[in-house]
Image 1 (cartoon, rainbow, N blue to C red):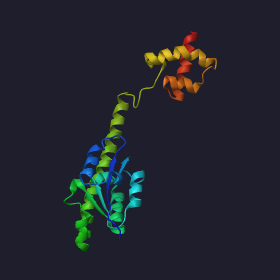
Image 2: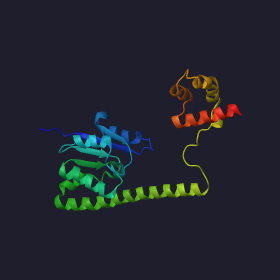
Image 3: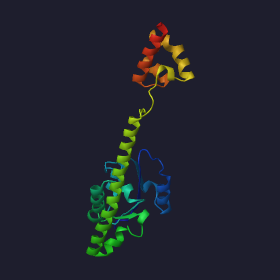
Image 4: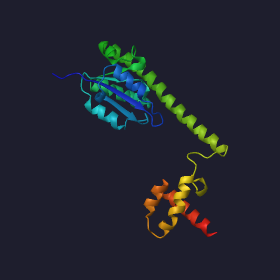
Length: 214
């Protein structure tokens, strides 16, 4: 006889590292840490390493806790498809903690065909809201980038130049430039000392070489 397992699934975006709140909710439900799966990834699709690992472990009768529906995913069609795969194909259950009184697939299962109809309606509504929120986020990002460009602002990290090196980097450059030119240290060693990437390193070396000859 198989034993029912209880799992927790957590997702935070790569820009939002605050997984502690979701994790604590799972622990409060008595879920073992080894049965909590967490991805730091976009919710646009289900190509997530830990989610796929969880999916492989789910068996009939198992229960999966998720903090909110948008933690499962943000794509309208995919969320509905995945929910139905877990609850109807695998015959496991999902509880959404944010809407626990409403979104507990066990309640819908007990109501038979009428439960399926109600579940579909509620799921479609919430998945639609999650999908629209994702689109709004993308629109706001695009508008922000366009506005910044219109104002002549530089996006991303500022480029590192010879004049932007800090005091420690400037000293390392001065003390090791000749050694590098005479091939007494390698380029990899030198760029590691400076903490620079390859393209930036060679650009600054060119600038410094030119500056010392003028």
